Length: 267
Image 1 (cartoon, rainbow, N blue to C red):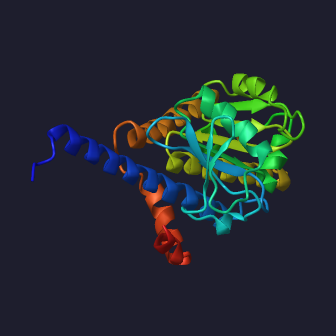
Image 2 (image 1 turned 45 degrees about the horizontal axis):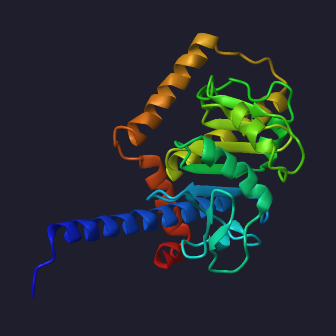
């Protein structure tokens, strides 16, 4: 029997590595859905988290329409192309077209946006309705100084022509407040998108609590807010660009393993 050529062996290794990357992406994305539910940040069957599949080809994973976030598994995620055409749909439920209108626009324009996460939480919607938006009042919110975009509400996101305006408003920012609507984060990994959203949510909740208290507020200087944002950004970069472990994302997944032990068996 002739031994396989080095080229064939290398090709097999590449295919095996890609399959492992895709499975990791599926597990991470489904974990993000479960964690968003676990933390009370979901909105019935609405809102979305999408992720770009590795390997090129502009394929993406998103939740099947009609399922709650705690029902999402690595296996039932829907694969779509950049235009929202379904490639693989294990449950036969399709996707929410309004959701992928937003997500496809960002994925197409921002190659660094591997994962796009969108929520409609009470705190996020409340801050999105405030004229000043998110205020740099505390350490959580100061991290978004100079890193936060805003997009005006245009109705339910069904019009494809809104995509150009949304992308223009987002620019190169990792976080966006969708006015009168909710919050959105773009991550270079699923873990980064999740961590950004977790911090945005806490920032919004803290702002509402501060405003409700009615006491005089001490505001950090613009220089301190900018410095804090740079420190947080460097921390995100250490994980994504320098290969440091994402300890926070790993800790959240351990929490999921404890509270939802069947999830990783399903993955």
